[in-house]
Length: 264
Ligand code: F6R
Image (tube, rainbow, N blue to C red; front, side, top):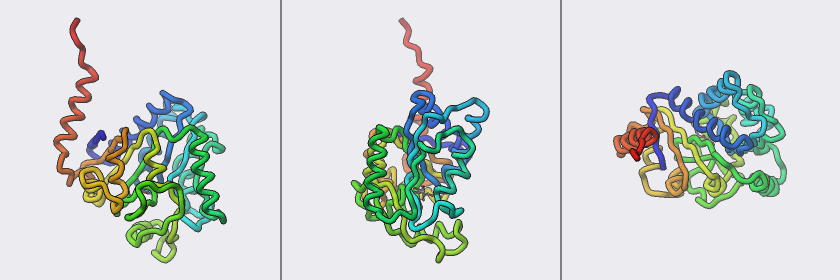
């Protein structure tokens, strides 16, 4: 696990976008796992800027989104379909046929979830999965108590998540109570994971996730077992980390190592 601490949201977003851009430059047909919510907005903005200014090429990229509310039509302004078009896809040269988002109105949920998992497999698996973290420790919509081996399925949302998301829907009663989400096991299958956390309201849960015990009560904590995890937190979100100095020390030395030359 690599933990990078940036001074604020803007720097966190720039750093995350740089990692995603590097992934695409190295493998132009990368498969990206994408998240919605507040946290990745700045990252998408940076990536759009890279497409416009430097021609970062998304034409061969495939994407799979983590989750979608249920039930919700894709035309609903709070659906994750709508979000992805508005905040990212319509601004870049991605082929929309290569963008997969869970269907918020599907009738046969089980068959659909199996199909989604199969499409991920057929695409060669997710190369880089972008993640935010919920205040209850969820990744995707894998709420506390979700099996750490779970696959894509329908989930009941935690009261805290419904309350958190009321800000987008106007009132609590309008927030869907269910979501279809990639499972924790699906997320863990990604070759690399990039977890972002910003703001003081994430500081406690981030500490639990990366420094606490691995538990289904904080599904993000399983990421400690991931073989290639990068966490980028801003100052506020990293406030409660016990090993903050240690992470900063390691990052500094890692940067220095890049410039190290061994004399003949
Ligand atoms: C969204 C998702 C969620 C969010 C999390 C944090 O696709 O999977 O796990 O990442 O709820 O949301 P924000 O970023 O709005 O604080």
